Length: 325
Ligand SMILES: [Zn+2]
Image (tube, rainbow, N blue to C red; front, side):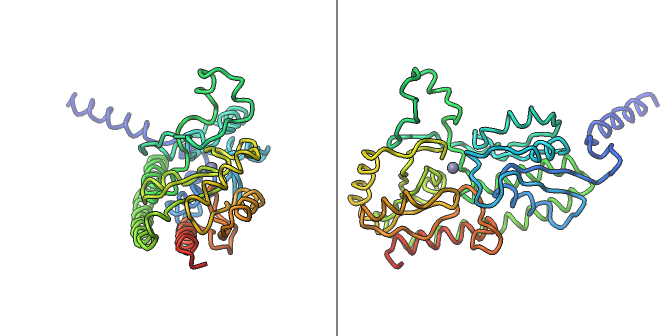
């Protein structure tokens, strides 16, 4: 009898501690979700599905650059109301800690990159950040952009881990809808697996020596590592938050492009195309149609969802690097 009572108490305690703060409020199923950028926002919406009890707010929207983003007062309001905040992590959102703190938010912070083995930035082609030469090596090591590549989403295998992290957090926060989150995530993960197979098939049509991506900044590290590309960029940086390259650096890149023999280089939807157009013209190569890199495209564009964005990028890369453009 006593042990049964004790058992009941333990079960009760477990149940109470498992009830999320949101469910104890008046609107029992209202879950306010904030997501820092559009690509992760798409993952979250795919796991949430049609459930209108859940409100999803994305801070950095289509074509927005999360590296250089300046938060607005409405972002702080959204965070204050939020039960959970999904973020990329790996210092992609360098402004987030300050915003979170200033907003007074108590939202649970879920890092989508959790469980992904991060790539270290090689930076062999990189030029120094403005003023960085004045810092000691130790200070440079603590640089706020971190030393790991945050662009995990360009590999759909990482996207699967990100979706699983979103699913697990939502299941914990809203256990009444756990089965729905699980089913939605499973269906979406199946599409991500198909996407991975599509990329392998497409990349196989590019001669190995031509698998080189010259872009604005170093965004395709995980894509390159998974599918066998070499990457190089005009900014020579994991972030767009750096000064434009000097004339000497541009000249060096032009020589590298010419020596590589690639027929095309690439601009990104989160940055202007002027610099890459100038480099392409001087190197005598084509500037391919703009790729979707750190953000989705606007609705109605070929990059409006993650699945569309990656298919568009891969198709564009294949056409550009096989000279069929
Ligand atoms: Zn980036």
